[in-house]
Length: 404
Image 1 (cartoon, helix red, strand yellow):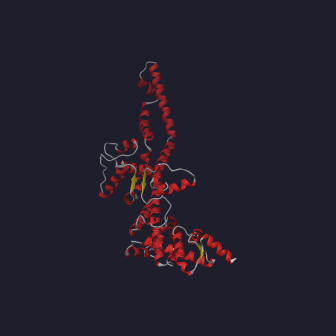
Image 2: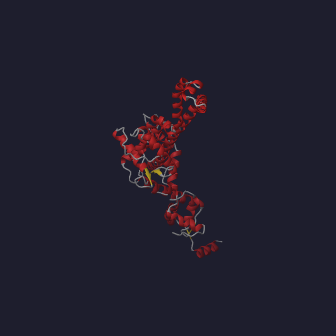
Image 3: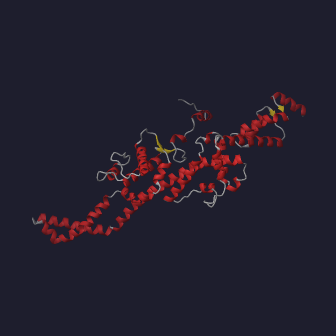
């Protein structure tokens, strides 16, 4: 059996592994483990060195050493370029803070779900705290996505006391990945909650109008009967060639019509009132978080000089300068009926203008015409597509031809 094994090894170009091969085997395992932690690819990498695999315990130790080396390289890549101040900030995250009643990391990871203006401000404060540490925006491209996501999962699932048991470098690298992912999650949470609050303002405005209609149903019926009686009286006056005023006063009552005039005007205004005006009644609630939101997030669009982004920039300038009046030539990238309401009286209303801009911004974010950098749910549409280099292997797998 031994002779046969040697002959087969010679025919296949294989040789038994020795202790001198261990460094090369560990490096091969580390290169395979750079993109995965699954054991099969790592063992396949050992086999690719034209070696006869040693005993199973040695294979396990070699694979473990290769994975540890790959992890160390990933840690070094994530921590490259960080200053001593940034490392000190990372070390403070799992430590209990006296002002917070817990650790800063736990405070950052707690994301409220109820749509309230103060919750949006809280999320924006956390976003500012994450950005203050200064994690590079390309940190996720330094290592394979699979390994980066593993750091994120470990950091999200591990409580602060467990992170404290990690080695300093591993803990810091895990926190870097968590903070990078947390920035994206906080941006999405801010936009989702703002979306619900702005949409809720329009929903409440619509329901308020419907309730007002329902409350005036009996008045509408009474006024319509009064109007019908007036028309009948006018028809009788025309047919009998009589004085119309006298017939109306006799059959309906002129004093009764005068008393109904304010009610008729009120119902006419209610019928013509746009739900947008009702939604603007919630302006005070939206205003509690809107300036901070516009200042914290950077919106982008496919079109150059997009009028919506110009309107957002105008609101930022007004908030920073403390000015209240909207310029007469302000961009108005919203519906035509809203424009008439905004400039009613010849001067743009700040309250209506701001509500129109944020409502339009909400719709554009939903449709994908506007996006936010570092966001996951509101990112650029073509970022969902496969990278160009990843397309040919997939096409060849299905027997398709790539034509440009």
